[in-house]
Image 1 (cartoon, rainbow, N blue to C red):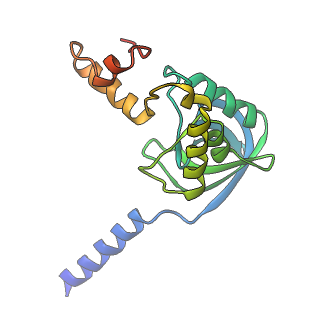
Image 2 (image 1 turned 45 degrees about the vertical axis):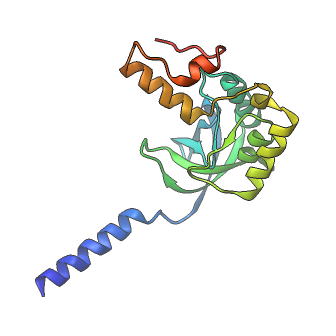
Length: 181
């Protein structure tokens, strides 16, 4: 009997830990832009770091990273935004879909060519369509002949820090990318 109760309690605790919190909508004013897919807003007097869901923008030191950051700032900085959210990431950031002045910010960054659809976390058909259109038109980062997705760029940066003598394979393939040591 005790084993059954313990197993049931363990299963319930595991289910609760793995089930996302109920969806909520946050509203607040944007006070900081960290990069192209992360911002800070004030909600009920408290700072909340927000990571845009479903997309990944170039890192700040990556080609188009600062342009993605500027695009996010133009759409959101100093404005009141709505964030539809269901979870937090491992860094404690709220993961959410942002609307500012009636604009779907996540989708707009993809449409302008400043973000990839983050396929590891999303298979949103509309975002995929917007990305394909931006790529075909050569918008934003798609103007580059071989843009490096940020998740590969980050992996390359991590491996270069652990092995100072070996460069990631994509560095030799794309000479316009340099690593900061």
